[in-house]
Image (cartoon, rainbow, N blue to C red):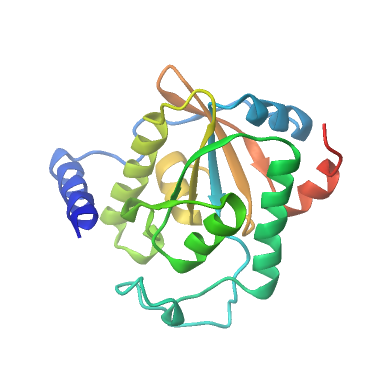
Amino acid sequence: MKALSFFYLKVLVLSLSGCSAVLSAPTSDILPLPELLETLQAGGHIIYMRHAKTDHTQKGEDHQNLLDCARQRNLSAEGVKQAKRVGEMLSLHRIPVGDVFSSPYCRCKDTAKLVFGHYKVKPELGFSISKDARESEQLGGLLYEMMVNARDKEKNTVFVGHTSNLRDGLGVWPKPEGVIAVFSIKNGVPVFRGMIRPDDWSMAQEAP
């Protein structure tokens, strides 16, 4: 309850200040896959992972009671395998992971658990596309704020969420499901370094 109250307080502060979601447009310095993996191995970067593949036959989810997984769109059997595969590849390539923050939706929490083994729920990462335009913008701004304030220089900080939050906050659309978007923070501004799509891992199977 305290976490939710703090979340809505932050949304209110952004609303009253008239803060735009994209506080400063991120720059891009795209790396090829081998260099992107080397960058992550060094630690100190940001991983934004969209939840793994879901069962799109599940309709009419309840956006209010996020503790009831039965009333949400959840990971498919293929999505479970996909998430486990990503976790295996991150371990194979010795990519250090620090804090893992997840949207409160079950598909994101399950992805975080399967890939990284641990997570903390952040209400600020909730599905922004289910909100009105103003709140979607505010949620994007909160994601941006969390990214630029990540302080771990030895391990990578992870956010597990949805498509629209990253688009609203940083102008990057993470597709398909299960994709990883990588950012560096330089002079307080996110720099987009590239994406690792689920199929890309087949090109990175050999341990470095």
